[in-house]
Length: 234
Image 1 (spheres, rainbow, N blue to C red):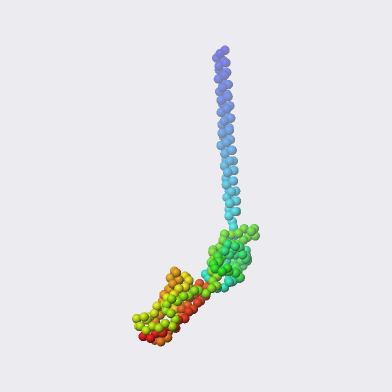
Image 2: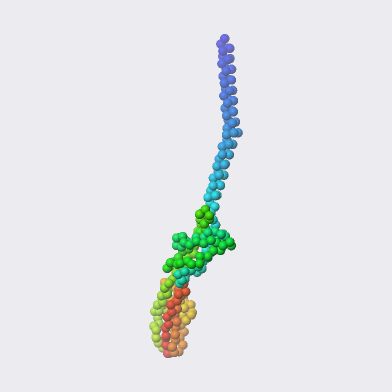
């Protein structure tokens, strides 16, 4: 009687073990071949969607290019031109402030015909804008100085109407000062100007009266001229 009961219990235990093993195996196989591939596909889909969204957000109008007309001018109104994709709306920014706009031609060329300058340095960039109001990255930077005043020109030596009587003093030395960056001409001969604006040049005298023209020219081509007369009587 005892042996039969023991055998029955052992059989029931084996059957339960096999049943739970079968369930575990089925769950494991379902996870491995059904749930795991579905999860992987879900992650891949989200990754692709994210990449598409990022790419769509990064698509902006192509940026225009501005041409540098000159570095300085004595005119309060200038013309600025450039190139972009055809039919794009172009907005001009002056010193960081949005200003006039225009539309590029079919070939991409555009022009701002009347740009009013502020006195001193002016910085320009341009952006393109599409139909959605999205703007491109800024173009290259163009800098134009509006210089209204004539350049400074001070002559230190010689003095006007000076007389030179010794041969060893010929050629004479002409010294003076202007603003840094200006050009100095002595009788139309270009001279070296130091970083502080001072200059020094020589002039070969002839017997009698010598007229010496010293001219300062700034970046806007505005000139200041001074004339000296030096008498040479060796």
